[in-house]
Length: 425
Ligand code: GAL
Image 1 (cartoon, helix red, strand yellow):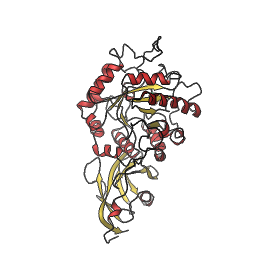
Image 2: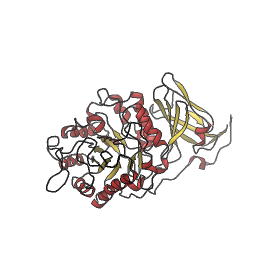
Image 3: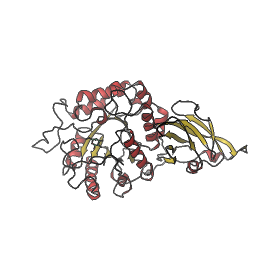
Image 4: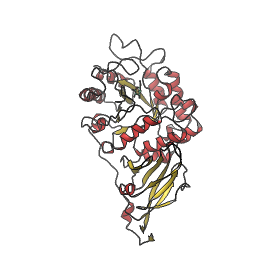
């Protein structure tokens, strides 16, 4: 390897911002993946309450997460009155015991704090938790939500009369809700959740690839069944990895919500896996909805979700989803091109027992836009410094190895071009 002559500056200036929408949905929201909190992984059905949601919202503010961009507070299943709709009007109504002040008032509470209000429904006759679904009432329910000041609707997939994967019914029924939302005139983020009613390792990539799906249908679409333990989260990220072409301005693949590692959480990953989840979700330009208990968030999880350098990757204005650059056994390298030409890379070790060197070799470099020989400065986005587990510089095309602990741990690095410097590999 020899030092060589200066390269043209153009080598370091890789790209331009994406300004075209990915698909046909044009509701003015979802220009970047949404960040926030969702009740499901934290409170489930039984634990959902007005007091709990208000406390979660207060915690978003107190921890500084709101100011880092986590603005959505999304009620998931079980907010409804279990006895059904308002008889006279047919409108959905909240459970009066769980939400004594009413949902419109809860929306005000959130909006007064600079937060946004999300809600949940289902395209079938019932939600997954057995509450009234929207089938046949799509336009009315969209109107009710708009009147309550809702900013985000997640629509689930349970209790459909023709099963979870009847694609004509999927696109017709979700499509009716999309049209209902458009008709309200209120800009409301629309998230379709094909996960409901699916077997644990289901592959729902058709939501992204069907011409009736993706950005023509929604602002984000689930690509798998629920991510509840590491293996189901891996299923979700593997599927999302191949669907980058469907994502862009206004529409994102959704590998499901974040789990965290806080002790006492109803669902959680190991601390290292929870950081890998955020890192890979950022590579995948995914929605980032925290499911950990915000009032008792561990210091570790707060540091995880507050990592602005990683959030910046998720929210990058090039809006180009990343992918898996290479996979050798259980050693994975993820990468995403960023505005201005930098790349974010995640080196992951999914082996069970040993620390391994995870290497970006020729396959990995071949998928990046750096001309061979370009000198790159490397920054560790979790250490907020030059890496200690790898070299602090790299040469495009030459093997670059990172020492990574096992069981889903990872190291996330940002490679930046050093203007004018190349070497011969
Ligand atoms: C599942 C869905 C979860 C959650 C749950 C509520 O089907 O994938 O994210 O919304 O239903 O019952």
